[in-house]
Length: 265
Image (cartoon, one colour):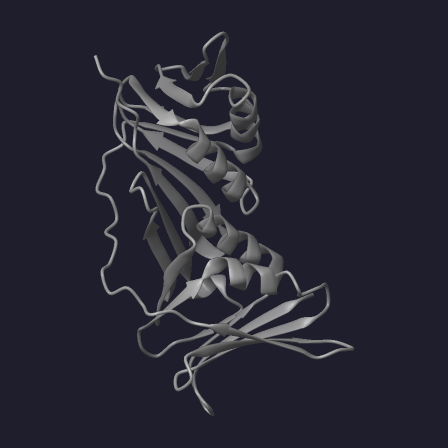
């Protein structure tokens, strides 16, 4: 098993320490965040790790929550924020192979992160941190009228098929099913998921809902999230933002919010 150790603090006095037992899953989670942003604040406190960031166009948002129980070990006596370029971190995490030990350390004095891979050859990589952005991105306060808990693979299949038709997608609920519509210049497609389908775990439609979304954004979210979770929660209301949540181990979660496309009448 590959162990990933993260240690944050001054030399000889770690301010933050966490052990993750699945480095590949951690890499996939960071990759999912990088779907929307190239760099992000990692907010660390005694309760866990959180990343919340808006994409540059303010069309979509990602919200990652990894509580302390999601880690094999977790120590963080006080709050601290680190800002990182995500692509660089992902590339270095890929250098970790099975049965290797990976350690990430952060020095408060140098503002550098050191990633060490120990095996037959000891590898050390240095990552520069960035100036943290002080402004916090708030969590959207939205009441969703339709909720579908389903397999990630099923929605990914629908999204993959829809991309062969057009660049926008419509989600619609009735009391009995989820309907997905896509229309291109020449072709169109319709997908239906009955609430009793094997792909559907839970289905709630407090009222009929219908909303249109950018398919490119949605496809990136679904593919990234599906690499970390076999189940997802799809929530939306008429002409309101969509929430796509991927449950992670030990009550962690990876969520995306996507603004609707409002067609001019």
